Image 1 (spheres, helix red, strand yellow):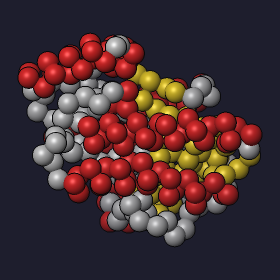
Image 2 (spheres, helix red, strand yellow):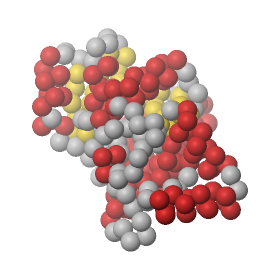
Image 3 (cartoon, helix red, strand yellow):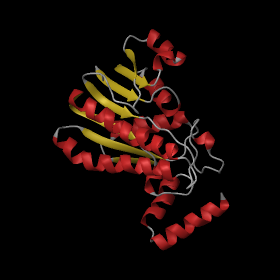
Length: 239
């Protein structure tokens, strides 16, 4: 039986992934902070023999991880809009959770990955460019993607496939903090369906969607800085 371990499965995209996977013939380990107090997940566990809950705080040292993992899905993310005047703690928290949290899990779980297994890191299209008011978040996600780029060849030699998900805006408690219009805004349910469809059909390193948002941010990433920074300034004036 395939064993999936999802870290960050208590709400939003993660919870929607759990709802889909629990209907399949898989063993499912779900982790987050204080997960044993999550009524929705406790109810799912009580009604399914192959669902297990494991409390983990990725901002701290990982003490124990599941064994015989076929798919490790890192879905943890924290977000706060940031400017130069934002607190140092906001920057530190996003790096510690979005980037270093993955590394903590990875270092502990690697020895428990089965042959021909897969690791998926849920990143963001914001990793493409440091847009105004989101520098701390995009920096943490960019660091995550860079790390995965570095690890992918090593993992391939071990028979483990590594993928990153770069998606756009999703309607969650995180994006509810934004005060600007979010183009291509998706629901967590639709996002989860798209993620599972893509990771099931392909082993390509990057999965990105939706198309229009990814093309817009790709334009920023590959444009000369004179142009991209000018456009970024225009976004700041309009925010």
